[in-house]
Length: 474
Image 1 (cartoon, helix red, strand yellow):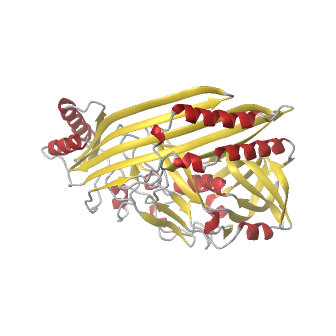
Image 2 (spheres, rainbow, N blue to C red):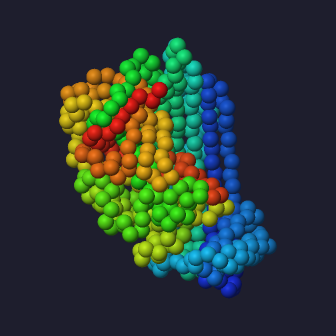
Image 3 (cartoon, one colour):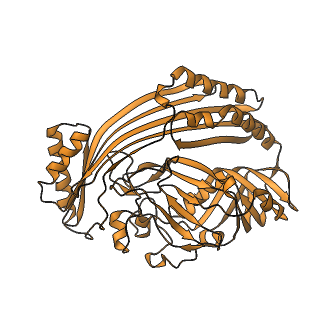
C-alpha cells in the first residue's frame, strides 16, 4: 500500500495538472447483531482500494478502483484528469488554500485488538444481554449489536505530503421495546469510541441492560410529558443530537455556500456572519476537536492531509469558526479546519464534522435541578426533525423526568421539545461541569451526493435552557 501510494504520486507528477493526491485504504469491519435471542448477523468483511483526486483548470476530477495494479493506476489517473477537464468547461474556479505540507503517522490507542476476541465470546455476551431484556414480561423486541472497524490508510500528494494512519473503532447498540395494552416504549444505549475491545468492556453492557429494562417498564406506567413553555434540562446523550443537528451541520462551510442545498440542505448562516453572529448566550462555547484520540471523529490528518485541529466554533455565544476544507476555507480567507473527510477510498472528501462538542461550564446537575421551579429533564434521542436551513426543529426523547420546585417528582413518557436554533441557544443559562462530560460517537451521519456515511462524535454535558416549548409526543 505504501509503495503503491508513492507510485501514484510519481505518475501524477508527470501529468499536466495543478494538484493531485491519492488515498490507499484497507478497511476491515466486523458486525454482530442479535435480535430476540437469534444471531441475525455475524459478518467480517474487508475492502481495499485507492482513490485519486486531481485539480485541473479550476475543477476537480476523482476516480477510484479496488485493483491495485500498475495498469489500473494509469487508468484511474487518466479518468480523474478526464473528469476534471470535462468539469472545467463551466462553473466556479476551484483553488486550494496554502497549507503546511506535513508527513507523519497516526495510530489509535488499542489495549485489546477486537478482531482477536473470539466470535463465540462476543455472541455469548450479546445473548446474555438478550436474556436480561427477555426477563421483562412486557418485552416484545430485544436487540443487541456490536461493531468493530479498522482502517489502514496512506495519503500522498503532489505537494509532498505522505501520511499513514491506523484507526480502530469499537461500538455497541442495545435496546429493548416493551408493550402493554398496545402502548410501546423503548430504552436503549448506543456508543462508539476509538480504541479496542476495552471500549466494549468499559460500557458495562449487562449492568446497563438491567437499568434499561427497569426504565422501559416504568415508562409504560408513567405520566405523559407536560405541555407548555417551561424550563428544560437536556442530558448529555440528547445534547449529542442537539449539537449535531443545530450546530454541527449548520457550520459546515459547504452548506453555508449552498453546495449541499439540493440534497442535504443548507444553513441559516451566511459567510459574513462569521465572527459576529450571536449564536447563543454568553455561556455557550462550542469547539471542534479532531485531536481527541478516544473519539471516532478523531484522527491524525483529514483526507486532504491537513493535520487534526482543535478550534472554537462558538465562543461566549459568538460564531467564531466553521468546519471547512482547503477549498471552502480559501473562499473566506482562512486555513482549513481539517474537516475534509471521505467515507472510503471510493468517495471524494467533503466537509464533515469531526468531534463537535460543548465546553463544560460551572454548574452541577444538582444545581440545575434545584434552580427549576417548573420544568422537565430529557435524555436519549427518540425522534428528530429539522428544516433544511437548520432553524426550526422538534426533537423527542425516550425518557423524561418531571421537575417541580427543584425536585424530580417522577418519570414522564414521550417528551418532545421544539424551538428555533439561535432563539433556543440564547436561552442557555447553565452548562454542566467537566465531571458530567460524556463522549458519544455517531456512526451514521449522512451527507453528500452521492451519499456518504461518516463517523463523527460529540463530547457533551447536561445543560439548562429557560422557557422552551415542550409537549407530549402522542
